[in-house]
Image (cartoon, rainbow, N blue to C red):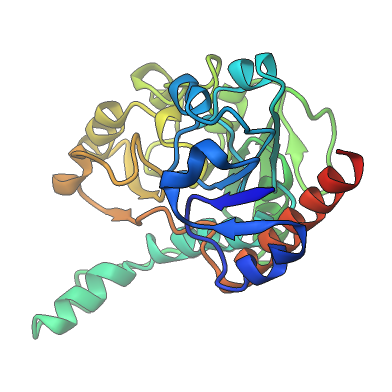
Length: 292
């Protein structure tokens, strides 16, 4: 059996998987592969699947599966798994990092110091303490973020149509109920027909004036141009973004927008998380081999 590692994983993964078959990172060997490991870069499209006649298993190192044609994979009898349990801590810590960095003007302060400026009077901080965090999508990552927010003395509300109650957040029946009351809104949504462009001009009008928006979920859940307009008008005080319409983005309107922190999709890229992903991948492949 040939295992193709198509994207970047922990360096010890090939050795970890070697007992289960031959392991390669040569994408030219896709037609021979029985198992393919991907992250967000590789797109497992209909064409990709058709070029892999021996493919039986695709494992996505991460949470979202929007880069995989799930219907066509099922039609071809290809099993698809993700490693959702691995990334919760890494992504929630990054979301919280953005929540701290924006109101504390961390990037602005650093940039002005490097430029030889002393912007003490211009940069006014605000605290997270007693502010309200609204989490949109209370899955594993949203739950971990809620725990961290509570430790900072924040009030946490959340909207998730699949979650009725939570020990870490007060659930709201409508998305607007979260947006109306939150000083910070953090998005943790999968990308599907219901969530694509859900944060648009109409929905941004529901935000509190001067709220901060954080997105470490999926890039296309927001309408970028509408978020830019909200930043320019002051409706949003700041935006922290780690996810894009494409990796890397072909172009982005946030380059000239005020008070934006842009990251190159770092959410799952901690050393510890890559090791956890590798452990889960090994477990999935072990089970696959034992039942094949």
